[in-house]
Length: 249
Image (cartoon, rainbow, N blue to C red; front, side):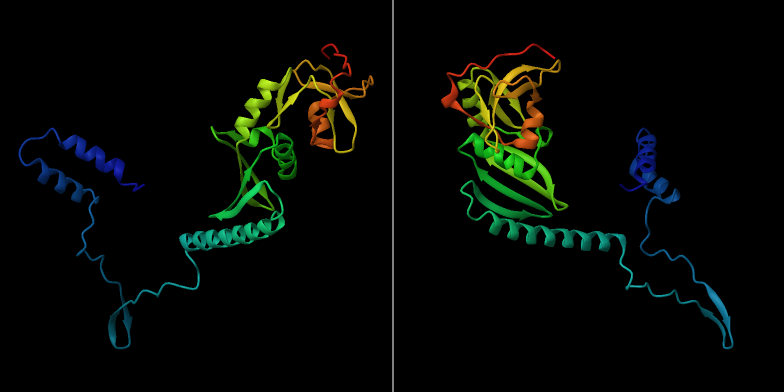
């Protein structure tokens, strides 16, 4: 913002209630305060004594080899956009065989990965792959947007149809619990990537579910199980197995 604006506004406001030619009074007042630029005004010439007599001092030419702040910012932006384009191209090839990935592109300095999710377990896997936490997710009507970074490059992940899937999961679940962008039915056992089956065994005082393997007394929080052994998949064929519920820790 022009730093002269506050003083200009104050001057104009003070003169608006005057009489006579208010416009002329305002213009002269602004000019006296140095708030108007005179395109024909000169700021004087500096002279120096030479052997031939007095001569004007010629100002040095600006050093065009040193970029201005604006030029430096523009070059940095171009570089960041170039890095994003390279990463987008690399990720497009990396995920070319993934059925969920519909598009990978660069938007300015940001890489955007578009996903079409039809299986909640697949969405859990992508969250794990991109390291997206609940706090990095934005719920939209038709998609979930996750914002993170990949090798220092801003990364946006757009997962379409996830809200509808989550709503269906909540309606279907007997004991739904949402964590990390995924809805878990705690009434079901869950199998981790190592093949172990976890059962719900109560919750902490903060409400975090506690799980144990095959009903053993050692309990682990859902957050730790997801972080170190996720993603988890519900095991519906074990519905007949009783999973004892614990007390609050």
